[in-house]
Image (cartoon, rainbow, N blue to C red; front, side, top):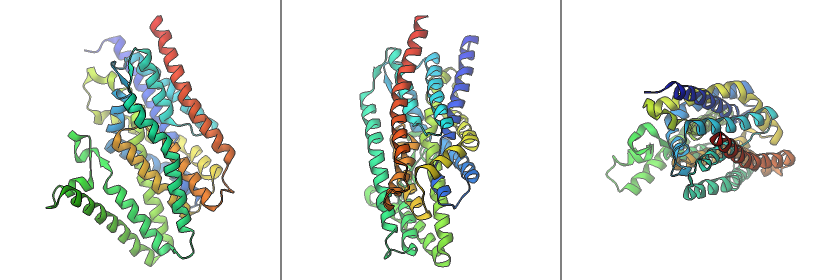
Length: 389
């Protein structure tokens, strides 16, 4: 039975969670490279970001949600008051970044706020989880930006025509897709990949079966694009860019919805709601946020950080897809804007970086660090004051 006071806190928490989901969606920029490459308008980019984002939230959002709900602090569960404070602090900081035109790292603010209220409640730091998170956060700019740079340099070579690079890039996307976890494929295990499910049915050893299915999916995707580019290189390139954008948007939903609904999960224990309901709730929030707020951020990344053509836009999105799926697989809260900014900048530097705004990049990095520290301090301090009252 839920009392009146609990119901009031739950209502406030739900509003704060939905607002956080809205700000997460409003800060998404998966289609920014496509807009920068002039293959899609800003409004269409925002629409598809929201549509594919809600699908990812429902089908891949469980791992990060569970990590945000109970994986960042040991020894205590978030109280309803703590959850509300964490959500309001995180959402408020992200909203400031959105309206200021600088993409703050949503994972930084949400993680800092949850750790802050958790420690204020007397919980113990989850050092092992922090090591995973910090490792991914630090490696993302180098791995994502470096890979985007390498791929962009490859496609600029005169001896490597589009007729080969487009199917090759499609094959790489297929390899990643085959090993991406989906909750509905194995709900009891937290999800499973297409390669894992199909390889289990083959009369081969698990390793050879997994590798075989992975390669097969890559060949199929690459083969379809090979047939397309033989008819029209431009159409094949456009379809590849749209498809990667869709997968990146899908990955954003899976890796980001937990930032919004994770702190809400402990509050819903008395109601015994299925996690799927919570993910749909968060997915709707990020979808509406993408539709209403993402155009501003898409413009900022597409035109202010670096100007990309269709080739380098594709090179930027492939590592972004891979990093996002890694975060989903291990249940690590990661900033999607950190991923996209790193990929866009890395791809931009492949042509010398003359059209890359170094000043804005530095401001953004400072904003990320400040948002992590500020969210932690604010959440810790506000809850400490409330507990003393």
